[in-house]
Image (cartoon, rainbow, N blue to C red; front, side, top):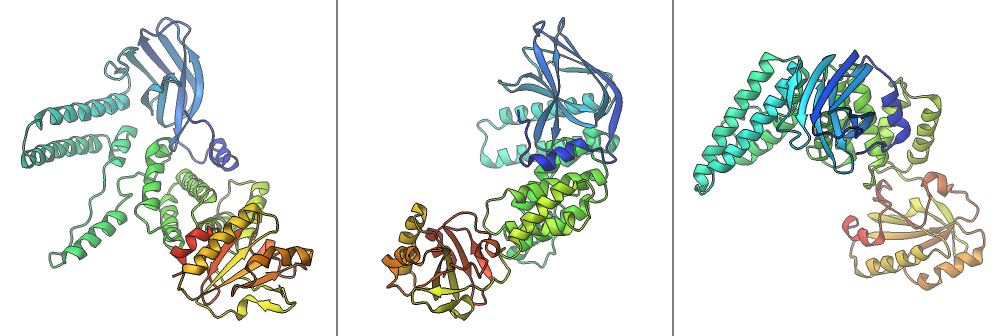
Length: 455
């Protein structure tokens, strides 16, 4: 059971503020679990996205656990028997009082709800899906493929009818919102004159455009369930081209959709910002910089303290000049002959910048891979190694083994190029790849990966 956030400072702010949230007052829930040992510890936990947090630990007494709270956010919760064994059942919080009876032996199948239409509806749906699945599994045994497809299609239609009946009868309930959110959107009807390729493309983009149609973003209910964050992840990771520009457009679209409710907007903004703040994907720091500038540093969000904003601003300052898609800062430094070499004078289709340090074992390994790449690549490129050694003899000794190659080797001993700042150098070695216009196309990759980038 996860209790810690990925980016703790930001997520603590999310947990600590009520932004027009949906809260119930003075709730009291009774759980009768027959077979539960007296004195046994259980927990009530809640979802915040796909993570769960313990709300309160309770002690069983005569098979009974009573949970009370002055204020509780509407959402999907868990009654946890044993954290180690991951034994639990879920329940919906959207009513002030109810009772759930079950047995320790058969926690899910023996569960009965009293005084909660929401949870009654929720578990009737769960049981219907389980029974329908078991029914289909039995019915398809030994059947030919065509018959299996027909059986599954009929079952799917029955499930859809059941879902729509629940949703139409109780549209504003939390249970209906959860059921509706789990339904995949349908693509629009394609034109009959489309080719097969055009139809596939149309269906994909139509599905993508309709992806959030069944998600109620007008309330914060679904922030306290795994559904919304999973939808966001699927949209960004599977339905969006994995390039910074495409993802940035998708982020803007998501945050525009979520802005109809302040709590949802806050939740979505923080989730997405944290996602790209810790991403290790090459060039995805450009997404972090974009979100930081447009939403955080512009004053659009109002839940971040000054200290956190300063940290974000410092990070952005370190990245803004070296993200993919921007023109590299020029480098002017002396080579081994004392001549000034300039990055901007290079005319090759690609420039490979390699920042190195004397005595760095990983740098030596990178140089060996770089030599192998240089011996085998037929692309139009220029390698430029850059050192920052105060002692010129250290620089000359470092490049001795490969000085005969057609590389440009320079030492920025005076710091005139402000390498650490302009290229955000935190560790060595560090590789950047620039195109013919000195636009950064890749960075922080290994020498072995150059063959995939420099073609």
